[in-house]
Image 1 (cartoon, rainbow, N blue to C red):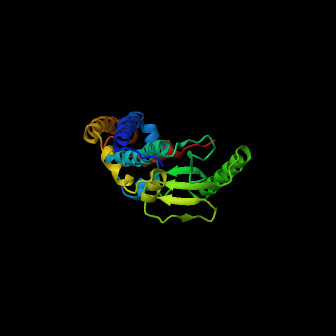
Image 2 (image 1 turned 30 degrees about the vertical axis):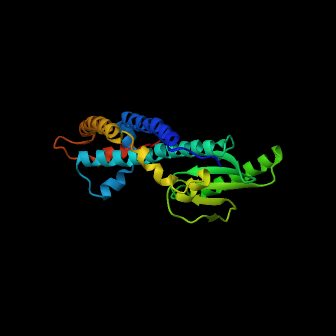
Image 3 (image 1 turned 60 degrees about the vertical axis):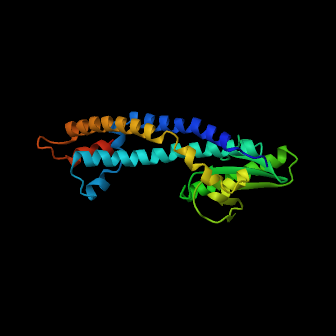
Length: 245
C-alpha cells in the first residue's frame, strides 16, 4: 500500500468539510412550517408540549438531526474513497449499493460505506447483501479476477471485525480506516482537520438558525394558536394528517 501523508489528508478534509457546513446551512434555509408539520404531532402532544417555541424547536431538532447525519455520512464516504484512492489506487464504484472498489494483496474488494453501526432496517440489510452479491457476480463475469471480497465498512464504532451471515465482511471504526490506509492511527488523525474553522462555520449556522426559528415560531402562532396563545391541536393534526377523500 502507498502511504497517505498528513498534508494530503489535511488538504482534502479542509476543502471538503466546508461543503458539509454549506450543505448544513442550506438545509436549514429550506425549512418551512409545512415541512416541520410532517413530524409526529401525537408524540408532541403526548409529551405535554404546550408552548409554540418548544414544539417548533423540537420538530426542527428532529428534522435537522437526521439531515446532518446524512450530510456528514456523505462526507465520511467521500473521505474514505479519497484515502483508498491514495493508498490502493481505489475508485468510486458504479455498481448499485457499492461505494468503493480496490485491489489489495491479490484480492479485489467491493466496499459499501456507512457512517455508523445503527443503520437501516432488515429490508435494507437484505438489499445490501443482494447488491454486494450481484456486484460480485458481475465483476467475476467481466474481469479475470479469482478472489473477490465484499465488505461493509463502517466509519465509527467498536464492533469486532467478522463475516456476517450474508457472507460479506464487516469492518468497523479504527479497523476500517486501517483496512483502507494501512495506518492504525488514521482514525485519530482525522479528528483534528474535521474541526477546521468549526467555530466560524457553527456561529454562522447558529445565527441563521436563530432567525429562521423566530420566523417559524411566529408563523406557527399565527396559524395554529388561538387569541390566548393556546395551541389548537386539532388544527395541527389536520395540517399533518387530514386527507379525507
